[in-house]
Image 1 (cartoon, helix red, strand yellow):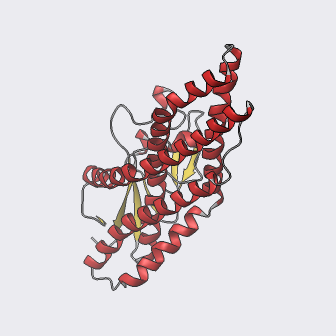
Image 2 (tube, rainbow, N blue to C red):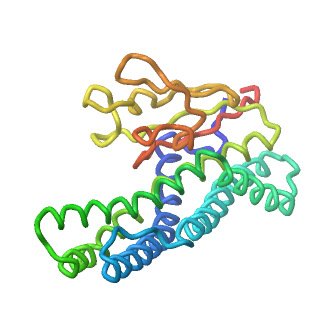
Length: 267
């Protein structure tokens, strides 16, 4: 049994994290820019009407476009690592065909119901944060202009913070989806191994987290089988890979776990 990339578990996880950070930086800026744009439009509407503003009509569509670019980049980047290693083992894999394959996987990923719900939630959160600030300002006896200025003063930092969090979480899931699909396409007999970050920031039930990721480190299952993720209540939930879009938010936000693929090559 050999790991497909030939790297140790710790080195494999570090390599994946480096790749993810590069994508995080790129897409966090795009998410922050769009959230900031939508926020400024709603501030202007509130100043003009004095009423709780609606989301810009194109906000959710623009978020979906960012998700599409993110998924395409993440799926191709992580999928290509698997393909390259498959070629190194003597498999005949057509590069052009895999480029089209990655694009299809990315499209299927972002069109999934779970991702559509996330896009809707991100958009609704942008508006709900503003409505809460308006309500708080009104309760404090502030006027429309004072409330609008207070929201505007915080727009940049809030947008950047949300942009980083969204990009970090979503690139993680899309990248692992690409690697999973590419691994299956090679025709190699493989198993997959959960690689946890081993430090004090890793989710652990003993620290009060709802899900335990540290205890999953080294858990190995067949490609078609899910990992068992322990819950605080003593049960487990199924996870096909870290960051899977069907997992609850408390199991994926800021997750730094990775997956290694182990080839059954007779050794």
